[in-house]
Each structure stands twice: as C-alpha cells, then as structure tokens.
Length: 342
Image 1 (spheres, rainbow, N blue to C red):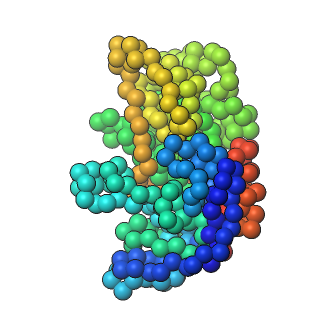
Image 2: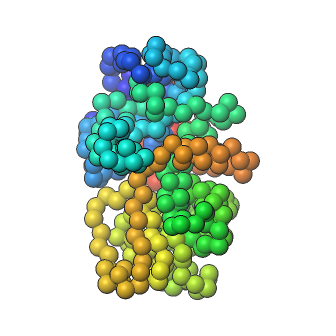
C-alpha cells in the first residue's frame, strides 16, 4: 500500500509500505479523505514542539472499515468511520479519572505514531472509532475531529455554567479552528461573538457564518477597538493562533476577570504580564484535544442545517498531489485542505 511520510522540512513523499496486520481488539480501515491539520503544517515545517520530522501524518481521517478483529463488537465491515487519534494507556491517574486526553503516557495516531491516516490502510483499537452518520458527506465527516477540539475548549470555558448564555466571546483567528470555534460558541449559546484575522477574505467568511463583529488582527488598537464596540471587556477569548501577539491581545481583551483559552498549538513559548494576571484575576486555560462526549457534540453540530462543510473545506487534492496539498495549506489562503485517498 501507499503511505504519505513527512520526510524532511516542507516535504512529503508517498512511499510503498506493507499493509498493517490486524491485531486483537483492532479494526482495519481504508482511507477516504484526511485533513491537513494546523499541527501538520507546524510539524512539516519543523515548528511543532512535540512532533519532529520525519513522521507519518494524518489524524483528521475518514475511512471505511475493511476488517474487524473477532473480539470486536458494534461495528461492521463497510461502516464509514472517523477516529479519536489520541491513544491513551488507560492506566495512569488521568485515564482512570476520565481525562484520557491528558494521559501521562499518551501516543497520538498521525503525530509521531508508527501509523497515520494519510495512508491507504491503517489499524487502531476499536475503542478509538466513531461511526459517521449516513447523511454526512465525506467532507462533513472530516470536520468531526477538528470540530471536537474547539468543542472541548468551549466546554472547558463554562466555569461552572451549563453553557455560554449571556457571555461575550472573542475568537482570534478565522482559520479552520477559529471558524469551528465560532460554530461551537454559537451552539453553546454565546450572546455575542467577535472574531479577528489578518486576511479580509477570512474575516468576511466569519461574518457570513455568524460572527457579530469582525476586526483586522493587524490593528495596533485592536483590544481598545473591540472593547469600545462591545461596551465591555470580553468574558472568554479563544486564541486559535497562539503566538506572542495574539496572547497579548487576548489578555488585554479579557482584562479584568475574563478567561483566555489557548486553543491553537503554540510554536514556541510566549511571555505574559503576570502581575496583571494575578491582580486582575484573569484565567489562562490550556485546552488539549477532546473526549468522546466532544465527538458526540460535534456530530450534533454538523447535523444542523446551519453547518456548511463546503464553506470550511475549500480545497481537495488526490493523494498523488499530496505535496501540493501541503504547500497549499502552508500558504494559508485556503481554510481546510483535504487529501482524498479513495
């Protein structure tokens, strides 16, 4: 079979490898489509803090079940599926406490793991699979995994509330994760949603998809402009970019008593004004991947008539053009780039 390998900086190569062998408790699937994630873009450029090149990419994957181990129940050959790519040990304190996304021995399919979803076939434990509703297109199904990341982040930001009712939120970044955070914030009843980006086309799309206000992220007076426009500080800021500039903007927007959620993958460390964080009681919260309940909520969101996968998935390449797919994703003008395998 063929597997895509990130072989060196900015380079991906299709290689001929052995088809994986099914083990007890596992399912073998054939890839339909897989997304080029922001973390893939970081990693292939050598900027990801935890995924060095070379590696086998692909964790935003939709496939069809082709083989099932004899001890696996609840699935059938031919089922269309997506996966939770985090692979917990199930034995550490976090796994036992229901936070397997924070497993102390975590492995991650498609991110430094022996297999990735950018391959003709792959195997994973059956516990990592979710069935895809028949009504979903492959493109919509490919949004389940990436949407689950902002769903998890938004739910973490409730802080004792059942949802975002009455809250004004800001989302920094109008890329895939930013726009999916918009869908999640709307689903969980945010009162007002403000979004920022450097690219006017992406800001316009955010407004089209339901953002109340959009702002140019390059503005030197951005925090002041937003606070004046909404008449108050922001209750929750979701930083989907996670660089020094956006973290500083997020803290200024959340000042005082607000929450800053770090949703994007930081390429390197940033500094924060710790005296302000302490004295103004600002909460900075990291958000790591997702849990099964987040997948269930993502499927509900994508099932709504208002969800339009075609607005998010803006480019699809065949696997033979995988290098072009990565180059296009790195260029940053598209929202979500998919690679179709079969």
